[in-house]
Amino acid sequence: MNHWMKLNCILALPVPWWITGCDLVAGIGEYCIEGAEGCGTTGTGGAAGTSSTGGTGGQSGSSTGSATSPQVMCGDGKLEGNEECDDNNTADADGCEADCTLPKCGNGIVDPGEVCFGSQDPALISFTETYSLALFDCNGDGALDLIISGAVVFANNVSNFGIQALPNDMGHFAEAIFTEALSSIVGLEPAIGADGEPELIGVHTYKSKTMWMRGLGECQLQWTEGMTTAATLAGVTDVTPFNADGMGTIDVAKVYLPNVGDSAPIWFTLNQNIDEDVPGPSFANANPTFIAAGDLMGDSLDELVIGIPEYKQIGIFLNNDLSFSTPLNIPTLGLSAAPVDAAIGDLDKDGDNDIVTANLESDSIAVLKNLGSGAFGTQVPEPQVQGSNGVAAAKPKSIVLGDMNNDGYLDAVTANSDDSTGKSSVSVFLNDGKGKLLLATKASFPLVGTDAPFEVGRQPVSVKVGDLNGDGVLDIVTANAFVENGSSSVSVILSNP
Image (cartoon, rainbow, N blue to C red; front, side):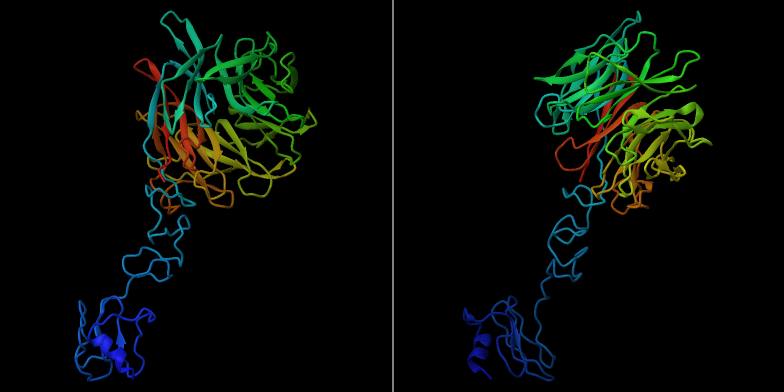
């Protein structure tokens, strides 16, 4: 036995620098505990160990000398001490954080599957009528600003129409900047212009002129107007940018209410040609409420989808090089009551874009699965899971898709217009990874902080999602129609990772 080393331990002399670890003395069970600085002799009936400075000696007759408890090491794959988890690494955002705590809202770390929202942050806008909402960088600072179209209606029924832009400061919004318009503007949608610069499109309801808007300086908007479509048409109800012909420029589709006895027409502004609108397909005996666009056939050209709530149907126009088919009426036996909006995206990652509808009268959303090449399966209503206010989606009026929990799958968010309790809400529906959308509740998804729906301003008419504060997670914005103290409002719900 190395008696010099034993003496080192007994007398608490410094351990030579070339000695590492705790097993300093080999033979006869001699040991020295590094850190605890206690030593003793193992073996039955052994003599009392001698305590070195600051340590505790071994106990007489014990099998080992006593020492402090082993240090808990986060990241060693062993669940010890106060650790909530230990996944054998010290990385964040992998289901177990670097400090061996479980993911939770408010820790500043974005974990895949996490859904964390703060309370709504309302902002007043000086409109008494609200028409449309868009997220658009109107001042060139790289942040998404809020753009709302509407009107101030005075007591003599004279209206002041326009657009209000609220500049974004890391998720907080400054006082609105007003740009006047000749009439109400509907269908605000961001797009990319022929020169690669961002533009905002919309339609003047007065003579149905297509508008292309760009931000100037501090969010003042400058626009170029197209030609009047047709003075004899009834009002335009919605507009969407789409890829009609693969030319790489903005194409615009506008859907109208029909004149008495006529079909509901769709008109196009192609290749950003402001000098001409051309007629497109029409839908007989219908009053369409929305138009949406997306590639449903896998050929890089966009199809058009319109909603016909009174027939519980949507109509799909397949695009064959700008020759649009007779609309597919889906489903022929009726959709869930009153589809008033739709969003298009690949829910199950099979390479085909699916359709999701917001159904006003049945308090639901529904998924129409794309089977490929423009063929669709049976429409599947999502289950009516009770949320924080007792329903999944109370009178949903607008729907948008986005990856709300950073798991790589598209989720859905609805703006729910019901305010019978004096409150309205948004609902978040999370994708289960197979294309099924389920209400975001803690019972269904362990990383949901608070059960949906989430409260917003009353009577929301539009919902959008985007990263407003630069944390890499999508936030929610609604434009709300309810007028209180002379103004309507927008609601911002920021993620709270």
